[in-house]
Image 1 (cartoon, rainbow, N blue to C red):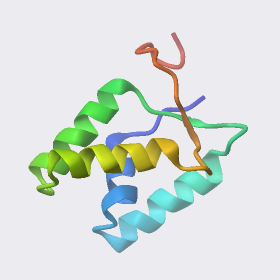
Image 2: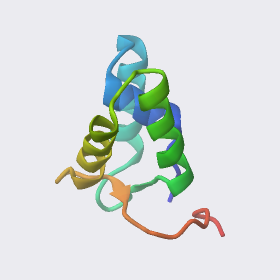
Image 3: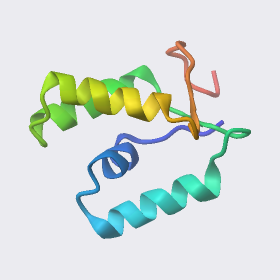
Image 4: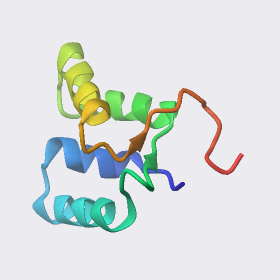
Length: 89
């Protein structure tokens, strides 16, 4: 299982840079699926929350809604593990 970086999920959530969005979408479509999901650590979600709040001025409820949509997507490719260990630990 491979981990996703904060930059990738920021691009997917904000869609603020079309070239970067295209790269993020291609990365996800090429490398992840329900059978082979991506892994996002709690630490990445914390950083993601900080970026959305600080740099994009999302409110706390907007950050929560964005994370909820990311995790609850029916085509989800994210492992919903509560472990803070790395995938290779």
